[in-house]
Image (tube, rainbow, N blue to C red; front, side, top):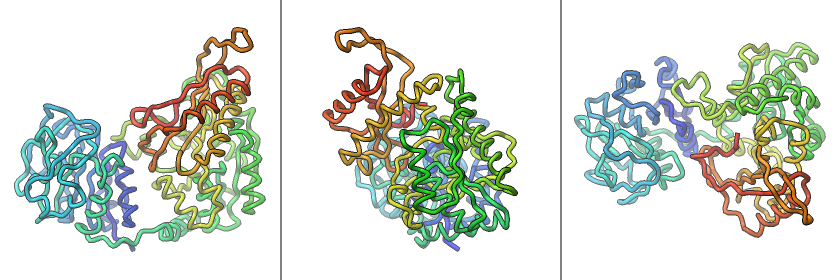
Length: 516
């Protein structure tokens, strides 16, 4: 059994990044909603606790409290943002609204007996960090000292080294806090004494065992999209249940150009998996007729996916389980029911978009993994490089990249534009490493243009390319202007009904990577 850290989730949109950083240090961790029963959390035998950030204020009547077992355990504790304020409040300190709220990049200065704790050793004396808070710890609890202060003089980090209790007002989990990952690694390994034994190989072994215990002797169908998430899921399930797995690939009509044929060629012909290919284009387009709201699109697509799987499962025989490649960012952004304090950003078709009543039981071995972790697992499983490094593609497909009613004409227009962008990026060597996700979007507006001395009134295509290491924060890719000009020129010349191309230069946050 691995040494473990328990992360209590108070609703922050970056809580999963805390888990990701701890796992990057090869330390096992689990994330629990703050109100999870104590016995469930303590069954992990955690060697330390991390309290996440969250949208609440500790002095609000409805604010989530600090579960008593955290301090009663006498294990190390690290509070982040709201977690720091909650720790201070629970121990008799004072938290008040800040005179100057801090959002975004900030400078903190290490002060007092910082080095006595060693926790902040990775930070420079004047450190760049990422803040996102409107409250502050005005008075420290008894036994605590200030370890760092913001430029406005407020406490940016506090600690009681003797009791191994710490709080940081900034977010060490995000990439915008240089050395923040090392702070979390130091807490897990040095402060909590965890052994770094958590690896992709260890995950595979435990995931296969868990799937086998869950499924027993029953049969499983797996929704296979062709991406790394579903491919890793299918491979893990296959290792657990063998020929009791049937993979189902559903062509919704909203895939990229040439993708249906490529998926069948890769998984049936190259990997030798039992693959049932279903063309459900008409079914999905009929269900989406007249729909423009993105949330409704996702819910409709989620339900139709499940209904197709259920029909195919019934045709195949006695099938009780559906495996799908749900990832942790999907769960976080959907603010699923097991995270009641999170704020929903958008509904993912495979989380909040699922119908309430389902005959099949879900198997989701990747539900608490991040994209880079899934790729590491895929490489360890020996999957082809083309599968492991395929760029992410939303489950609803082009339906959420056509920002209007989904019609076959609009899908074909977008498919052609998207294909040109990906082709040019691939030729420039930018589809792996330089851009983590790139695509085209068909906007619900038309603009006047001039082609062949004549007036046109055509669609606008927006190009989007981002760089990210976790898909929870992202920056727009600084693509070569000559490349963008080439893509734009090809689109307006080769794609009918399009006369204008724009490039999205918005980061995440404030935007999401997808437009819908």
